[in-house]
Length: 152
Image 1 (cartoon, rainbow, N blue to C red):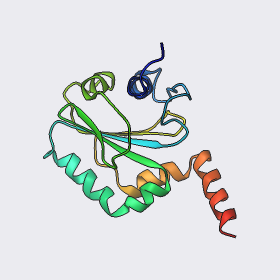
Image 2 (spheres, rainbow, N blue to C red):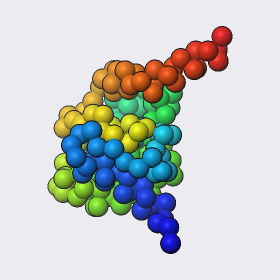
Image 3 (cartoon, one colour):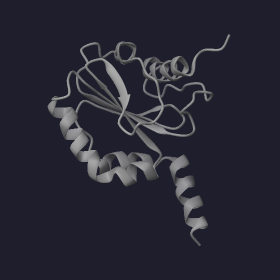
C-alpha cells in the first residue's frame, strides 16, 4: 500500500531538515520535488514580529516568488499552511519536531527543488538575499537561460 501524498510530502520536508546536515537530500519522488522551492517560515503565533516582518518583506515580491517557483509554507502555532494556497498537506507539530524547533520559534528555511536545505535563518530574510541564493543555483541559472531563449 502506498503512502498518502500528504505523508510523503511531510516525510520529504522532515527528512530534509533532519538529514545528515544542511545538505541533506530527499527522494526525488516527493510531490513538490523538482517543481517548487519551499520557503518554510515557523512562528509561535500570528503576531510574532519575525513572521510579520518576513510577510512584509515578501508581499511586494510575489511575482518574483512565482518566477522562481517558490511556495511559502507557514507553520504558526503548530499549524502548517501554504501562503499561496498550493496543495501541500503538512503536519505542523511533526514538522516542528523534525526541524528541532519544538517551541515553534521564528525561523525561515529555504528548500531547493532538489529538496536540499539552501538557507536557514533565525531572522527575517530580505528578498534580495533569498533571490541571490536561488539565482546562484545551477538549476535556476538553467531556468533563466531557457526562459531567455524562449523570449528570443
